[in-house]
Length: 420
Image 1: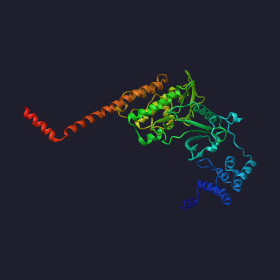
Image 2: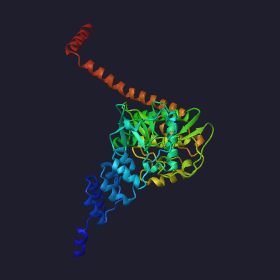
Image 3: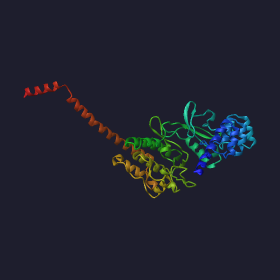
Image 4: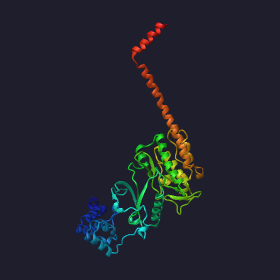
């Protein structure tokens, strides 16, 4: 019992670390000194990756900064942003340097047309960035400062910019501009407040076939545009529900080209290293990509088939399995089962899904072909819906006849008897 009581009196380490952040925000030098002596972690980071030193630099507390410098972090960018000159001098004297954006150009004439001044962005949210720019809400994807030194991630950022500049389609998220001449670097796109398809499916569950087909047509049109892009086709390679956004008119737009690839016509590509579940959503990845084989635009067709089936079934493919196990199932020629009623897959919808997830990528249809087949299915569903309405209208007309004035009925009956 005594041991239990002693352990109960100990303050959890995490509480000390959080108190350290608060003390840095208040400029409480003595409180910080006591917490550090009591074992608080000076390098503790909050959900936004900020340490107590970052907080102190933002607030301009020079004494606190001096006390915390032993942590090794040097948040010079924060001090510069908030114009705390004393803190700037102190940090620079300890070797802090401003990070230079790796895409920085040497001359003002080289600044790209899409460049946006970050001072014109007013951020409204935290991790998922929504900002105001020129009076409108925009979505902002930014690289953290520590990512700038990662050549692979900078290359992916540069590739995504190159793609976005070329894309203009109503079923693809619109690129507005980027920040590349200062840190952190950012991509600015249109903001779609309705959220993504994953969130929508979680709320709604299985969709009626006519809605699923309409959504599938939106996705297919956006993907067809990317695949038929000139001079090089664009492979999305990460097509899954969270990368498909809903606009105000309830239409879908393909988004997030972070792992996309340009493909010269009649060619295939292969990754330099196998993809991991950190690179893409494993639950929707084509087997040839997972197995690190050569692949082409048909990899996106495979992903599309899984999304279409998910909209009908109301659950993600192989939902009972761990995500990391799912690609192996596809590679073993397994496919998610059709559990929904067969009538929900009528007019060739099931056959279309099965064609799209064929093992041989060459046998999968193109998105141009998929659009034609989906349009035909949509027409069949519309005719079936109109047919269901007609009997009701006929029944209403029939009831109206019988509800007419009874005197009309009796007079017709008397006339009939006299004539006989």
